[in-house]
Image 1 (cartoon, one colour):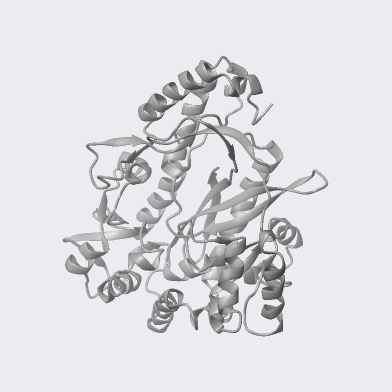
Image 2 (tube, one colour):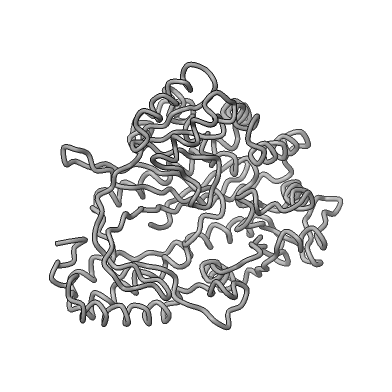
Length: 448
């Protein structure tokens, strides 16, 4: 068996070709779609989003562990966002050398100085894991990162189970198809956004999706939008430039864009330096943060999701600060941490550099960036660290133990890509949402 699929089936060329054709049509029928690269802002031509032909089996205990942990991670992120002293200390070395994080932090400081005018906080997070395989054959769930900003694919992943169920049925594996659980992150995310909109207290106000210039992944967001429209909650899609040119605050700091009051700003853009193309873009981010609109996330929660904070949380005694008298919760969270090491200047950071240079294949070098594709591996770690090991520039990174998941054979379906068997490494992502007022927080894990 490989990934729960018989080896003889994986090697049956005719069967795989037939199932791949069926799978692509099923993805289109279910709305597992993306716009094509050539026309990212037009829905006239679309294709299926990349996915695997067969689902990836996950041990039930691991699956339930990830879901159970998510409410704790929601609470942790929210507590960090309310602790300015912790954020200041954790990010001090990073903001000294990383301009992007520094500019975000200056907005954070400006909001603290002026005073937050909105007590409602909306969080939509996704915690990503891999199943680490040890040399003795055992395995454990290890966190790669937690995404507090624009956590994506809640919409498309809500419909992927039906695609995989259909494929397994067509292949004659009815029993296997019944093992795929329901998945509804889009509905869960929409419930949280709807609650924040309701608490804002104006039925005329809209939920504003702050979106990218290039919108290939629009359908992932449309699923959430449609769930909101089912609740008679109006949504609009605006870019930074739209808000800059036609956005303003009134005397009560209510945000208006194109004459519409904004109850919720749902950031789906703004997590990478290249999203901020000018000073005007940064001014626009500050304008929205100053506003009465509920932000998802607000600037403090954005900073809580940085790689440096992830590394600081792994230090002895830090989790206990956020979960006093809750040793079981601390133990559950800490058990998912891979080794995380500081590159700050001093003996501790020097030791980390030496360790990484001696065995680069055992680690991952992480910059303070989101969006995937930024991590550094293998010999490239040596190239980067050799260039910055004597410089404060190294503090812009953290080092993490490399997780070793067991590869499994599957077929990756991508537009115009050859159909060939591939060794796949899979992640497990657990979505969570929370809505906090000044007196109450409601947190839940909504999807997987």
